[in-house]
Length: 355
Image 1 (cartoon, helix red, strand yellow):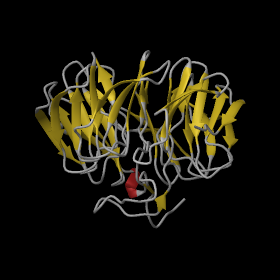
Image 2: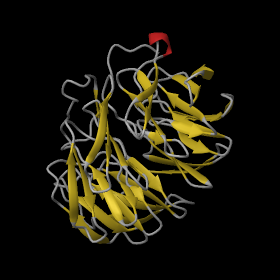
Image 3: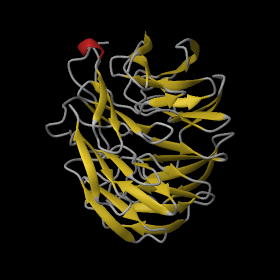
């Protein structure tokens, strides 16, 4: 589907923002950030972070205990076995107990709010902020170091044993040492919104841009190994790609779905999905799931064949979240906020959490 403008996800309650010179477009009310563990669905939306039972969707806890008009959440939480890491729109970043929602610590040194999902490796949390900085935070909530980019960071950092990769809306992807020193940076044709993905041995990294390209880079040098733009027909790439068995899968804003050989960008197959795809792809057994802006959730096989689909009342701007048994999707402007499915596409529950 052709568009004359790009989507901007608005995450300020009662306000809006656009990406400066990066891209222009319509403004949309905040979208829920959703992640899940084996037992808990964590939903960051409006004045609360909610912990829901993964089997029933029922409320287990919410944070904070009482509504505070200064605190608003829309960023996607990071969920581990024991904790939830999530930032708010008042420049605070929290570590919560996943079983109770109790706060373990609060980091308040950022100068901007949080939209992107954090990463955690070996007790260190890497939190991307809309002030353009990546913050490395220790296990007890202390600042270890800060790395500054030139614009918002909406993408989750990718962390390996040797490096950290940061995709910024300043059009650059950065490689950092574990101490936060820049190793290299490579400029792409547009803002980088979705998280990059690494190949199995960590020698290549793949990232799409709003500038209508998907690129593969050498992780040692940042050199472009290939650039794919589908004979200039590729639209903006907003979401994260998936790499499965040396095939790279991704979708563009116009609803085109691509499968490329990761080594050389040769096409494996291409398909059209009816609708606009703003979010990324989520892996399931023998395929992946995506969601369209118009509210359709689709499961697709690795060969491009349809597996199942479900249309919801509402709009979807973030990729589905999944564990081994349950898939969860968040909508706005619809009947409910959160929907749970089994992995064969049967809806298990739906809910709009309340404080």
